[in-house]
Length: 157
Image (cartoon, one colour):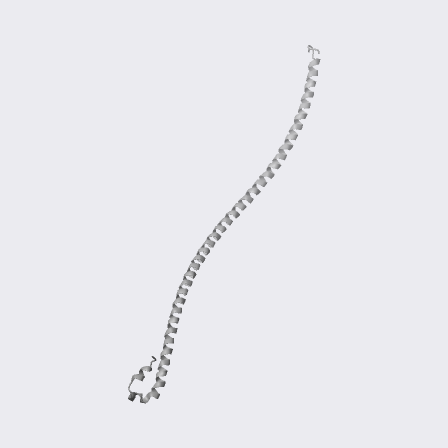
């Protein structure tokens, strides 16, 4: 039964304006149908809004999780960079120390080489002197022996 079918049950004296009321009733039916459509559309929009709000909430949670992860990674990167810089400074200090030690050892090695050459030269000179002294000593011994042999009372060989 449509919204204006109830009108058929009224007595005839109400039917005087039937032709003027019918378009109004049809307009009311059309308005009621449109209002129903509006209500249905409004409910659909509310459902979509709730779904979008839930999705937005999920996206915000995901964003917050990603932001936290990014902050942790940035902190890790900063920590690693700081550790790298400390290690790099230590390596540079050790390298400088090693180079200084190497230079000192090189100087000492050069000095020892010079001293070694000087000692070798002194040794060679000393050996030459010793050899000459032996020769002189041998000659002196021979000379002394020959003098002793010529002395009276010396045993004759």
